[in-house]
Image 1: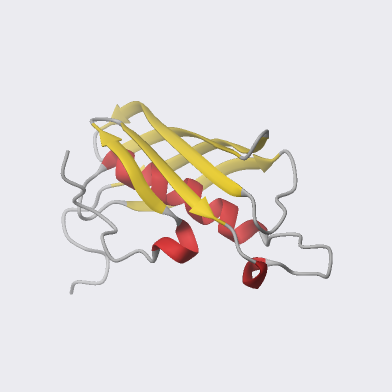
Image 2: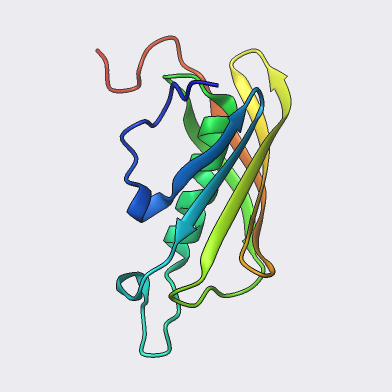
Length: 127
């Protein structure tokens, strides 16, 4: 399936699309020491969230899709050097609103929850 959204997302920051099909996406992010917030190598949660967010956007796969609400919880820390795999599945569509379940894992689950997406008629930055 052709990815029609978030095509310029930097794979080094939010991950690489490794699988995409109707209503589903899988993203892989290789974390680095530059993502760490301390000497022990704790990866900033924004990178984990970013991978999950990208997975949700690609699962919806509309050029104008945006995230308007997220209900997620971090369930375990990520250490620099670990690989995060984020998966997203569309669970419900109601008009322009799409609810997407997301899970991000290393060798354990590190984030899980729901991304609430919206598909506006035109790009949010267009006038």
